Image (cartoon, rainbow, N blue to C red; front, top):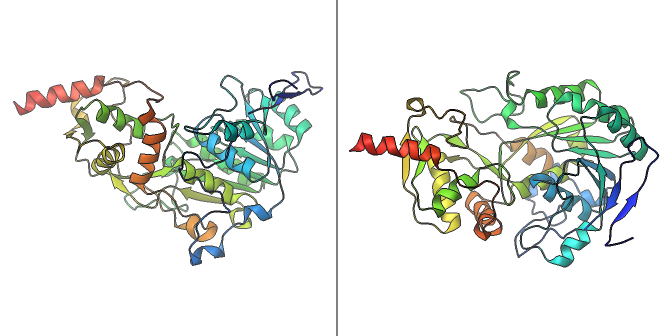
Length: 383
C-alpha cells in the first residue's frame, strides 16, 4: 500500500476500484459540528430521539458524497464507526479537507473512506457492482430521477434502509404556509423526479426515509445562496432585491442537515417517512441581506427594490431565491426525531463566511451584470 491508498479489484466487466483514501473529526477550528452523542436535547425530544451509537456498525453506500452535504455527512458516518463507500464518477477528488481542518484529523478521515468509481446512469454496472459489494444502507444524496434508483434497489434486495435527499421544492405553491409533509405536491415541479423517486420507494415496499430540505447554506455551498450576498457586500455594492423584499423564506445549515441524516439511520420512527429539514426560523429577503452583512462584519447594506416584470434578463438569474413566500414546518422532525437546529441564522451565516468566503474561497465568481441593469434603470427613474 502506497500513500495510504488501497485498491480492491473485483471480477466485474469494469473492475471498479474501491480505494481506501485520506478523514477528519467533525470538530474543526473551534466550530460546532456535533454528532448525535453530543447533541443537545430538550426533555421533550427523548420521545423520538435516536441513539445512533447504540446501533451496530453498518456497511453504507453514499451516492455522491464529494460535495457539500456529502462531505459533512460522510464525516459523521465515519465517526459513528460505519464503513462508508462513496459512489462517484471519480471526476472530483474523493475527499477534501474541511476549511481549517487539522492535517491529522483529515488524514484520519481520508484513510477510512472507500470509493466505488462508476456512473450511476450505467444501470448494468450499478447492478453488478453493488450486488457484488452488498450494502446495508444507502444514502442517496444526488439522485434526481426514479430510473436512477431502481437499479440500486434491484441490486440490494436485503437493503435495510434507503435514505433519500429530496427537496421542499416538490410542494405545490400554496397560500397556506408553512408547508407540511402532508401538503399537496406539484407533479410539474422541476423536482418531479424526486417526487417520482419517493413514489417508487413507497411502491417497492422499501424501508426508506426521505429528507426534504428547503434552502441549504454553509461552508462549501455550491449553490449561490449566501455567496450571492457576500459578493455584493464585499464589493460595497447595493443589493438588488425583487419587489418589496418582505417575501419570507427559510434556510438550514448544512451541518444541521447532516446531523438530521444521521438521526434517521436505523430509527424506526423514520421508517417510510418524509421529513422537512431546515432552520426553525423564517426570514424576509431584506432580513437575509442584513443577516449576511452582520455575519460578515459589513456595514448595513443599501437595498434596492425592483419589479422583475420591468426587466428582461434573458437566461440570467437576477436573484438566487424564488420570488415568493417559501418555507416549511420542521415540527415533525423535532417531535419524531428530536432534531433541533443547532445554528441560528446569523450564527450559521458567520460560520459559512468565516470558513469559506471570508477565506477568499467561493464557487462562482462575482457577476454583477443583472445588478447593473437594475441599478441603471433605478438611477434613471430616481433622477
